[in-house]
Amino acid sequence: MAANGARVLVLERDRSFKDRVRGQFLTSWGWPRRHLGIYDLLIGSVAHQVGWADFYAGTTLTMHRDVIATTPHQLPCLAFYHPAMQELLLGAAAEAGARVRRGAAVHDVQPGAPAIVVLGENGRTEEVRARLLVGADRRSSQIRACTGFEVRRDPDGNLIAGVLMDDIRAPEAIAQLVVHSELGQQAVIFPQGEGRARTYFCCHNTHPRHNGADDRPR
Image (cartoon, rainbow, N blue to C red; front, side, top):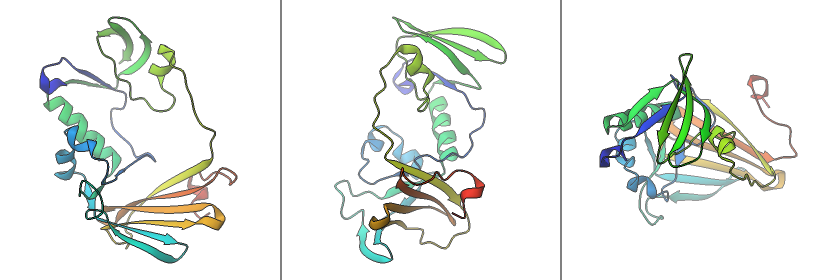
């Protein structure tokens, strides 16, 4: 938007990004990434290209899939370290002409034309007006709560736990998905290159939660 002449203000709460368990893998059929203008940025910097996907039923390999050859857009999957991606795209926004303010927390949003955002930064409170407001503030969204959007959600049927691993020997060009249907469990490994990978463990909500260092052995 800034590159096309709009005045854009980006409010980023975090002064420095930290690792969180969140999506760090773009499938090859996620084609809108090219139209958003971020594909080349990711490829040229933080993204690790993954061209294959192995599917297992227990310990049996059931499919070794070439995702470039078997998907409509013939692109690899992309894996990346989330904080590095955040820094890259925030910097790209600034280079495109957006004004970026880090460490600014949104306290209130008042819908209208224009909308009013009440923010706090360095102990000061300020009001900002905008014709268009875009909120990307996670599941417990402050913007959603202030603007009165209705929340609809399905019951929690599955639990997903994730861990970031270093110094692993898994193939770096292959995403691996292991399904134990009889146990209602699935494990996924998304390699990020240089021996690092994000691993997810998925299970039905009837299992106890996996959270914190004490649950890593389990």
